[in-house]
Length: 262
Image 1: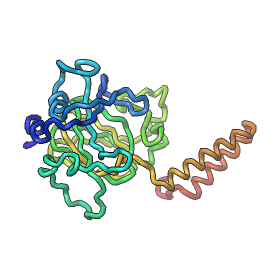
Image 2: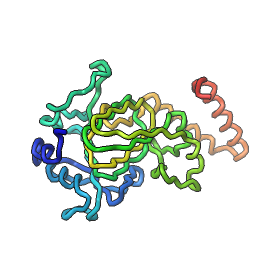
Image 3: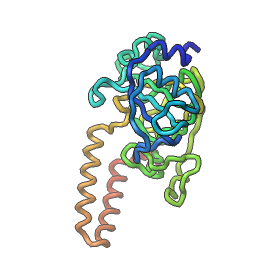
Image 4: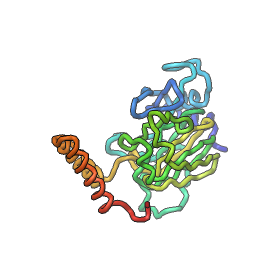
């Protein structure tokens, strides 16, 4: 109840923040249908809380999204205590884990109606809703074959009305859904896909890694090796390429799949 727009604006004042601005509610990180802009924090908070804007970058009903980062986005982790020290004094991270397991705290503010792309994080994550309301749709890691991945992100933007001609396998993905209201905490296990809609203007923060979506080094190396192997297969005639590709798939299933995944 303390974090009203007036309180937020006064607490951190006119410090500049880098934000996402989108002319449409569904933000797409793959096609980059948004722009990055900089605003004083108090101005940003007021705009994010509005439905129609008198001042704007793209359109009068554009959406705003702040996701805090460290000073050097490539090296420094997000830490609400460093980026937003005044507000951090109000924050008490729930003791659901050992202190040495804590990696970062990401501060987020979203316009009402904003929808973030479906993605996974490589660390366990607590999403803590402070104000407003969010709908979260989740998919198990085992449903990755049906989510049309590009890196850590799904190409299926509209999970409510997917284009099944373009993404026919998406219907096989089992959907889990919940609504977070002020004071709710959602535990999102590592590798679980999540799609978030801010149903109201809201503030939240979470525990994750620098960007929350960097694959482990061993996994990245394995994917690079696989890409090189697939490139080598292109040297074979189609019939041979198909045969040896299927052998590779079977070998991966035999050596790496979990037995309880079915």
